[in-house]
Each structure stands twice: as C-alpha cells, then as structure tokens.
Image (cartoon, rainbow, N blue to C red; front, side):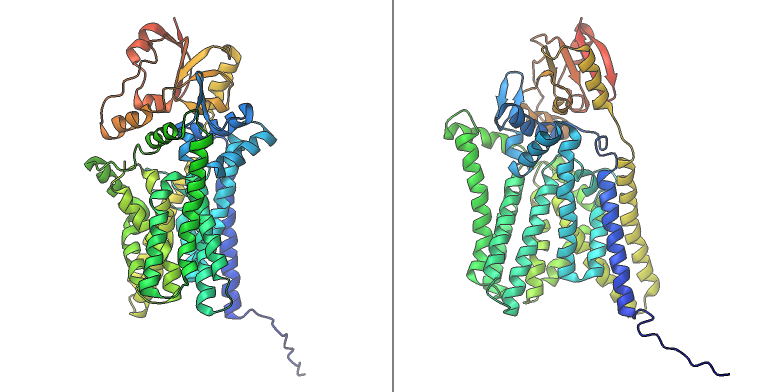
Length: 512
C-alpha cells in the first residue's frame, strides 16, 4: 500500500532564517549577561571609593541644602566634582535620592541605566556599520574591555562616574550622525540636517557629562567636517557644521551657568578656580606616565587595539558613505589615545577609547578570519579564533569575579559610627564615600591637594604637605584613598590616637 507523502509548507527553517534566529538568540544572551553583570551585588561590588563618593556629594548636597556643590564641615565647595561630572549625572541621581532616599544603590542604579543605553546603542551602531555578526562580536569585546589589572565597562558601568554616561551620549550622537550620512547619501529626504542637529545635541550632552571629553570630541567633529569637505564630499554644510557648533554651544552654556551662578565669587574668580580644578592631569608630559599609558594600551584586547585602529583608518580611505559613517568610530579612539600618552596616564582616562576600539577590533578579527579561510589557512584561522576567545573569556572572568566578590566594609564602618559616634563632632577623613552612609560632620582636605597627592603617589612627584592632624580633630577615618596617598602622618596617629574600629580598608581612630 502506497502512502502518499504529505508536504508541509515552511516545515523547516531556511538557512538564512536559521542564522538570523541564532543571531537573535546570541544578542538576547549578551543583553541578559550585561543586565545580570550590571545588577548582581550592586551595592557591594566594586568597593566604593574616593571618586564615586565625591560625585555623590553633589546630588546629596543639592537634595539636602538646595545647593549644587560639594560639601565639607566648613561649608560648600563649588569645584572639584561639580566640574568633572555634569548635571546629566548629578540631577538624575538627585531625583533617585528624592524618590528612594540617599544611598549608594540609588546612585549606582542611575549609572546602570546609562550602561544599558550604551550597550544597546553600541550594538545598533556596530550593526549599522558592519552587520549583525560583527556587531555581536564587538558587543562581546566591549563587555570584555577590562585588562588583567584595570577595570572595564562592567565595573565602570556599576559606579557613579562620568565615563559610561558620557559614552552613552557619544554613541547616540554617532547613531544620529550615521543616519544623517545615510539619508544624505541615499537622497531619501532632506532629514540629514535634523539628524546632524540631533548628533550635535548628543555630543554636547557628552561634553557636559564629562569635561575631559572636550579635549577630544570637538577636534574630532572639526576634523570630520574638514575631511568631508575636502575628501569625501558627501555631506551638506549644515550636516558638517551643526554637530560641532551645537556640541560646543551645549558645553559653553553649561560652563557659563557654572561660572555665573554656581560659585560664590565673581565670574573671573570662578573661572580661575574652575581652571585649577579641571586642569590638574590633562597634560603632564612625564616619561613614567607615558610608559604606563603605553603598557595599558598594549594590554587592551591583548595587543589588538592599536593594529585594529590602524586597519580601521586604512578602511576609511574609500570615498564612500560607509567610510564616512565608520570614520568617527576610528578617529575618536585614535585621537583619545594620542592625548592619553601625554596625560597623567591614569587607565580610566583611556577607557572611552578602549570601548570604541572594540568595534575596530571586531572588524579586524572578522576580516583576518575571512582572509585566512579564503586562502585555505584553516588552522591559522582557528588559531585566531582561539586567541580572540581568550581575549574575551579572561577579562569577562575577571569582571565576573569582581561582581561576585562583594564587600560591605563601608556599610559596616558606617554602622559602627552611627552607633558609637555623635554626628555633631568633626571626623577628619579623605574618604568622601562615607558621607553617603552616615550624616556625620566630615572634614576633607582641600580639593587643591588632590592633584598633588595623586602626582606624588602615581609619579613620585612633589611631596604632599597637609596639617589636618595639627588642629587635633577628635576622630580620624582612614580608608583606601587616604592610605594610598599617605595624607595622614602614621606616627602622629600611633602616638596621639587609638584605633577604635576597623573594617578593611577602613580604620577609625579616636584621640587619646
């Protein structure tokens, strides 16, 4: 008996549909991983520290006193963290404090939101430039952007710092710029000017968010405008000029607001204070700083970062819309690394370049792998794939270890102080993060000493001189930063104070 065969339409997936489904599954997995690593143990890992604490002072002071400033026992301080990180970070955190109370978790959750925006925007930009597979690899590399010794996007995306929010705005700006180029090239409509204006706004918000971005982003935008005018010849004049002028205008307006309204002195006095607060480590030109910067650059993506950027610049040689869209993703990290080599050499200064470099590395890996396969060099191709797997897995494992190693030292120290120490007495310290956990009356060293302290410790610079113990404060709290810069004389502490409580790295001393 013959049984007729029954054909079921669309019973199997086509090869293309199957690949697309796998790509979607991989993307969903990466997004889930990013969300998980962003949220697990958020109040306790990484350990909170000086920079995060100083940034949290501003929204806390704004909420409690209605003043946009840092604060110490002697009063408000209008410079330092108010200059380094802008209202795009401070105001959302102040709102979070208003809704849920002052706390480290409430501040960090705002940065996690920016981190997730950056993750999605980075994938969309990479996909628009190089397709979904390269975008998946680039996003994976971005999540694995740390080195063996220094933090990456997972760790920075969990701390109240300006880098990740600034990167999120930069990525949104590049997405808008790519849309401007595409609409102009394809003559879809005259929306390129609108997209260029949106790009300028996003770039401007990045400048407001992190003032160091001013060193790189405006020159990059000006260079892109010149290159398009003289070489690519794709964009219109509004498309070339709007990103630069709108971005600079955003930063200019915020700077004027700071100088006119957010300081106690005259416009000129505030300008001088702002320069001193902002310019500490921008240009150093020290051999040791450059050496450390070179080491960090080489360690990034296990030596692939610089070759990938060089290859990306070579790919931008074509006079095409695709090359013009790619150009800012290569110029930005390239210019950034050039500045980094003459700066203080602090690894976090180069972090935005490393994040954007993930796309260039992904393109280099893809093209190298394809080139080897076409020449039947299958073993070498798999060697490359294995090497890239290590480049991803080792940093991800290190970042995972960080987020799975929580510490509640700051919380334990705060609990002791809240129980045993009146909140009216002055506590001398250089651990500003503690103000998030307690309402004690902390006195901090002058902000002008920060640059001296860092240079002394990081580059063996001039000695740090501070007489904070000469006024005989009743209590002294020393943590990781105070210990690192050795701002308090240990001999004086041993002779005139006694250790009352410790929660590594914190030590709380009372006067004998």
